[in-house]
Length: 286
Image 1: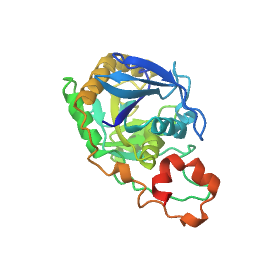
Image 2: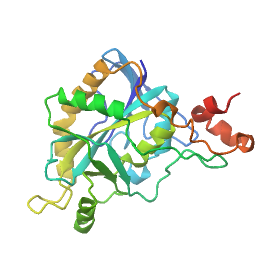
Image 3: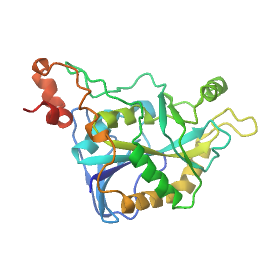
Image 4: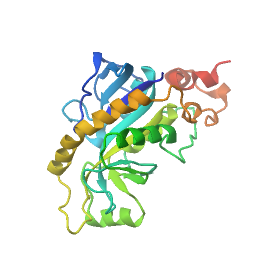
């Protein structure tokens, strides 16, 4: 069974019910991850939990070392990641308290490192479907089993943050056809694809952003209140997922780099090849 990673966002700093757990400090070529990775067993399955914003939520969305977080989980053998995130709704029918498993992603961030590659090695990875369809389907089923209201599909837009939207921005995103809005899924999803890790999002709708004329604009208190109420749902859904997780990956995520490396192997700098060996060795050896 492939190892599963959980990246917890706002309001979720641990997974209850884990056994034989220990904190693992991981060093990566890209620096330190947001926190030590908690490795334990849930329903007999080994999981790795990482607090995206650090323990106690001290790292801003724009300050998160996304590359280190994904690389750390990859180095621990993680092949599937479930991201647990707060989001605002840009649709009337996605109400606060609902959950969403999005199927598309729009990146509106500006100041973040978006790729592991560069320094003499170029890749063009396919992210037409940025979330793993197989893992997303299994996550959706696991959420349905909790009895919570869960919505399938919709496009998530990632903004830079850490501020919330203006009304003009929020209404523009609605006009573009976006369904939910958050601050952390980009570049996390793209880096997971480069690392050939399946990635799906459990998005908790905490508010209507600022566009809704009959609802109050989003505040931190609103976000925390919904997340506190949904923590039990999130943890139960993860237990459901782990219990029913298919042993093999029925997707193309595990070979995402196979046709993405474009640089002539003979001219890749040795230090870059060593730096990224965890990701590319299986394609460069021989």
